[in-house]
Image (cartoon, rainbow, N blue to C red; front, side, top):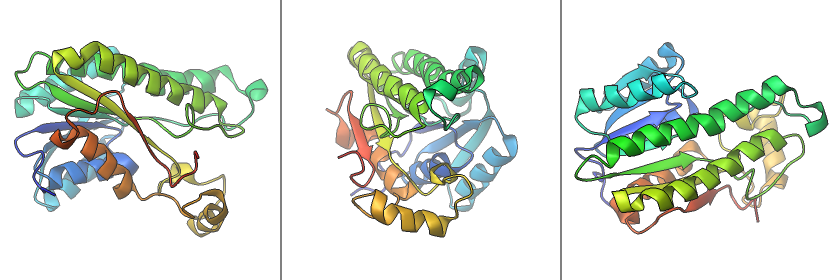
Length: 255
């Protein structure tokens, strides 16, 4: 497989300061992309940029809150001004709040997950598509959803699952709306992966490993590199006829 699938292309990753987003930045850069990482914490973004540059890649950081339309507009504009195009975008920014049954869910927690996980994706999609459809080569977008939502439910995560089901619906609808514009849109739905979000309250990584031996058919969490490989496939020319897909990467947990 080519290790330069994204040479000469610009890839934007939201939520790029840690976890899956940081791994995505490094993975795209390793295959030749110029990287723009976005998020709300400058220090974390700068650390991602430093890691990319240390590995020989090219990257820039841009502080942005995806729940704010003006921030997203500025983010896309800055990416294009810096590198000349926006060829790939991964809408990875997301939050988990609540962790309690619907009857105990607070309005604040609901609005927080809704604003970031759904409105944030919608605002990002809107600006990314507007830029990509104006380019001769179009572009590819991958939304990071979850195996919670369309694919499975767990107690206490209903609000999060509802927002991620909405991401899948947004992905499919936007894919249909804009494939004629030369913009190809898909989603990846990770399950529990090797990030702090998959740890239960007070749980250590060793305790999580024991739990996952029973909880997942695969017997473990997915690595962030495994999730990144799925994203890079969907963003690459190898997936040129894949439109509106939702690729589950969860070790069989949703089966």
